[in-house]
Length: 124
Ligand SMILES: [Mg+2]
Image (cartoon, rainbow, N blue to C red; front, side, top):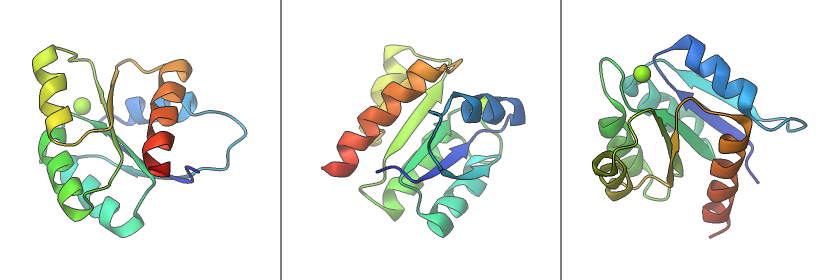
């Protein structure tokens, strides 16, 4: 069961949209971070079930944050949210251990699919 979700995105508007897209009727515990470095710190602090991670961010981008998060927890379930869905980018984040890639802008349906995927990984 997904209870804790960490949203890492440098755009407060994007974070708000992601929050609106989360399935209703779930009392998720939500955490947020505005760049990759903060995201890694929040991850270590809060140990979310799922991290929703943007790629293009200042200070530390999503690629590096993904690497650091997976270093901190090799089983961490990270969903990458990006407008850049070139195969090269998808391959790169999958190689870094992303659970899945969800194209931006997110929708309730896309987020639901990503969380379903995450849920499968959590159950192992
Ligand atoms: Mg960004």
